[in-house]
Length: 452
Image (cartoon, rainbow, N blue to C red; front, side, top):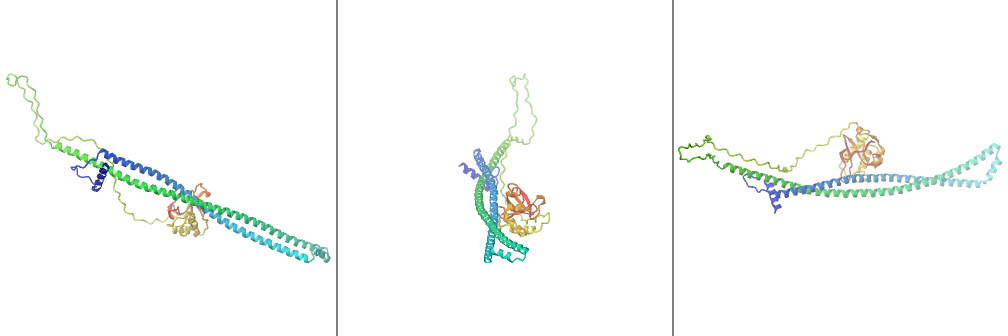
């Protein structure tokens, strides 16, 4: 019943907007009803405070997970880059092994031909023929030397071919092993990326649920606070009206004139020998109406809480086009093309491992931007950090890269953006968001900066 009364008073106050005239006799809420409203407000406020704390904690967890996810995706990108390099190395090593094998086979064939020719010409008798056919000792010496040189040369070529083939086979085996390791690393990175993505998605759902609860609690708090203010105001105005009526009634009552006071006589009143004391005379009173006595001012009631002001939707401000970023220095060759490319991607969604044309991750965007600027960068923020020359923030120019790292070094980089001047950048932030223009320091401070 009490709650229905409070709700009725609240609804009446909301519908009327103002309290009735002073001479009306509004229902005065009891202190118990006011306390109930205050308790409801305090409970709602406590609920909001608890939800705010939980929301802040979850938001911090999500931020940490975003960093972990960024590390996972960049590790995945790195594993893909290394896998691609290992694939190319294995392909090159296998081709080299095949080439060396072909050379060894050709040397074997040549040696076979030479052996057959030697045999057909008499084998060791060929040497005897050189001795018998020599005109002089010098001719004999030169002929025998030539024969030995040819034999040694062919044997050396054959041995080198065999050695090269063995080395090529070994290199091909190592390349195949590296390729297998890179493939396993890429699979592990992909698994880690998927786990990080799932963790972030789970936390985002938790944050969304708490946000919804927080909104409901704030609505309850607003209603409770509005009810308390209305009741307090109505109570105070009713008490003031009652006091005013009492003062008016007292002022309207006639005031009796003061009666003279006489001392009783000592003797009998009819005894002429005893002088009779004349009654005391009072000065004539003015004939004007006596002013009513001033009422006693009651103690000041406590200030009621300020009623909540109605929420007024602000008139939409005219949207202004973002100012062109300041460029303290002219961009280096190719930098403007990189910046123009990045601007053209604003609004496209973030996607793990994507490098365009319809979606991007952070290093995929910077890679494609600088590809438009004529410079090849790998799709890996760590490798991009290793490929640049570091510059200070005060020396930044449009087209420079901005890096976030967990250890301040290239090896720990997990996010990259493209500087466009005026303290702003273009980057692909994270899943659920689009490529955007953002202040360089909108998130955690960058670790270092680099010029391509």
